[in-house]
Image (cartoon, rainbow, N blue to C red):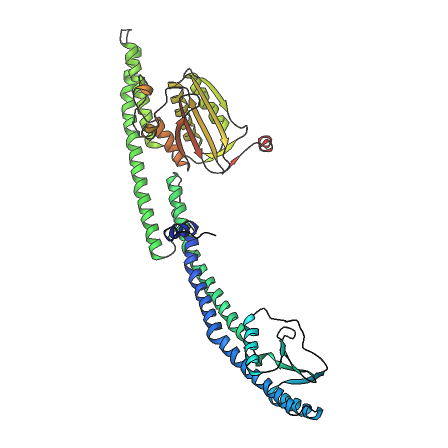
Length: 459
């Protein structure tokens, strides 16, 4: 396995760190606690548990060496009995002689190898005869056997005489304390993150143009300050929007009055040479006023509701046909999405009308995205827009050159209004090169969609 170069490690770790505030906050709490627990446990086992176990094992090995030497001094049955009684009474050792037996050949070692290593080292340093021991057969005892000429001298010792058996209690309490601390930390972190999530949801909803009731700031002082600042900013923006809408509505109303009078005077006046041209100018002025007002208003106050996407595309297709274009329409039957019907219809009509005014063939299509949501494409076979000018086309009042705007009615707000509507739904519009040779406008709207049962089964 090849190791990464040192300069790549920060990038490698950064890609694998949690991206959410909740995940990173949890990591900040959990990682130091785990490191502390591992370090304390390691220090405990290395500096305390192993030391105590080694001393206990050395003491037990010394008692066993004394018992073996005492037996060899008087190997008679009476001497063995006296030795066994004394060892049982003074050292809690059970001693018995298994005559004509030899040591087992198999080695039995426990899961914690340090116990066997320490005991083996202690016995090896104290005994000069072959020995064998087992720390796994009996949970509370250690079985030690020493080879003697008469057989095997078997010694059963309490386990606590060889091992510090209470170490697991320390680890258990350390684990319990760690879990409690982490639980409290996770609870507090979750509360703080939830306050930030509520603020983010409110900001996102406001960005989509939804009416969000005022919410009470929660969380830490800094989070409450950010929420309060957001609400103040939202109120200022809303006042600005309301004032702009009211101003445009007032201007529109004031301009419509003289336009209506001019239109009436033209209708009552006897025919003259420039009458048709003046009527066209009045129509264009009225269209411009409608565009300005629609851009300022944005239909943001409309409530989202389930809407049939094929019906909206059908209305846009009819508008394109009235403009003289040949229209191709394809959409899954029964496709429904949560939309603001009037605003979204206006966006589609703008895009379809724009396509029809620049091309002879228009294609409208819709499909369900695998990640959820719906994608709608409007294509034409017109001259298109250069790739480097796609973003420029979305700027309000932007009228691109020559190829797409010669003798065209409009003020350059069609794409701007359509993108504003798409973004108010949480989506966006992108421009691409169409297979028909012209421009392709793609609207992607996230959110839940549904299909008719037959379509869903077919998919």
